[in-house]
Length: 167
Image (cartoon, rainbow, N blue to C red; front, side, top):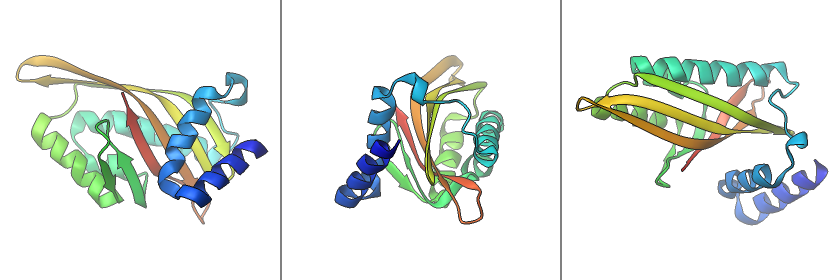
């Protein structure tokens, strides 16, 4: 893992934090699965991920944008499937409110968290998700992959720093 730290540190120093999710995605795709675990060994991180994913699936069915935004840090960035970036917890909450107003709530939501890599104060979770909704009387299924970058906070809790939705 020290090579990963050197690699990410070099990217961070040269290009800033905005490139970090891309580097993490490349690392996760190229890393053999025996280096990756579904459990981190950090009970607070594991609970934060389980709670956020569980609450997301429930909140998508009830339209509760505040619950969806709660695990994000104040300076978090959400990168949508079209590449647009939304910065800040409040803006992310506003994004989901607008989604619910435009498309309604989900009839079903599934999150499959497949990999988790921890590197110091950062953790990289990847997987795929599926959201089913009724739109104009027709079933619509949105599927995609995700990369979520978690960051340990000063109090030891974990918050989402970056969330990238991938096709």
